[in-house]
Image 1 (cartoon, each protein chain N blue to C red):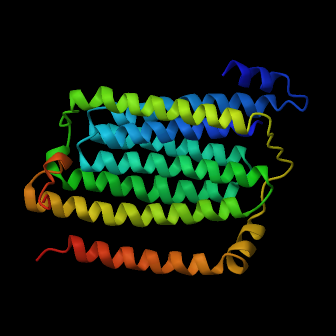
Image 2: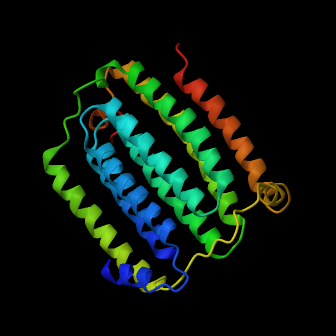
Length: 99
Length: 177
């Protein structure tokens, strides 16, 4: 297998995730798009680990998975708090701290 | 893309089965990812996300990283997606047809995405055009665990503290009072 096919797949997933972060207004959907981005990074890490026959890539992919789980927990708490305060999770309305 | 296909077909140690499986999984992942960012129903978006995450796990198996694949299934499909579905259900406003994707933002974001992908694709094809991944045997789990608990012990402890901090932080943020 070529390394490039995995890298290009990861790049496509990354760009779709970036599109989702930019275009969606719903807080939950933005979190899902961030998951897409983190998964594309994991594919890159594991592919490079397989290329160099080194276990470090897989270890860092595991670390990324742990960080993503923590991120979802905190992000969900923030979205719930926002919903409780404003009855909406539309991110374009989240301008409370605007200067 | 044609150069890539030509490179694959001119491969001497051709891994036909792996490449076919890669293509099938990759296409379904891309389609599902596009559905995640375009569908109007948020529950459907979470379910499409399951397909993408399962596809990522399948790619890990193709790359011989079985432990990461199992962790991906357990943590992402088992826990994170359930968390997403809970979040969707707890925020009533977003169930069903809700999303009004900003029309003027959509074309600009699509432009950014396509531009980003073309730049990355050119750079990747330019840099890694003839690197091949040869997998003779899957990475052993014992090797991964040895590596985590010797060489990468400090990042591992940092991750542990981070998870604890995120747990406490989420409770403090979401607590009612």
